[in-house]
Image (tube, rainbow, N blue to C red):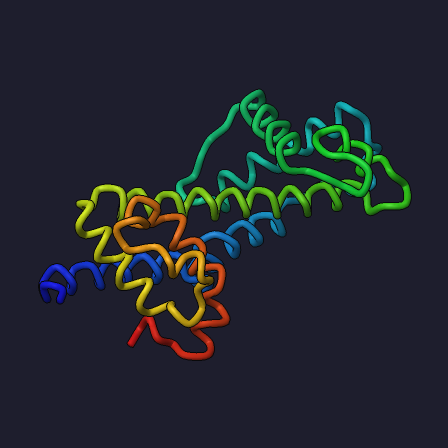
Length: 206
């Protein structure tokens, strides 16, 4: 049987972590500010697309998002903003035929597409995904990483008990001790199924 005080502390951590990574909280904290910043970005849609105008636009857009939409305001130089924009496109942009910066430029000059808007829409999605990932990493770093192994084992035990009906046999066959060092990965798995599970039962807040 668990010692009640350590168990209560472990349950508090579970509640805090799932509150912080709850989809509604993620949307209000990350998606909404970025979307609002993207909508407030103004540019001349009739501008002729060249390498120069493309560089200028994506740099200004990324700088605008970082100043207005992502957590603490960040000030970027032109070269920093351009480097960040190129990195984001290279690591995340894709269309039906290609990936990366070149794919984005081809979309921007494609007369059959909506020019820059197509690129800026996907840039917004990539930035949002990256910001959510970084935020969730921060939650784990501040709430989980500093805990003792025994506390992490207790948290794992609580999670396995509460999510048992929704977990695959491969996880249920593992003991809390085996999973204690993989708590962030386990929480990510549970969070992926939590929208359905919580809507049906609401069990983790009981």
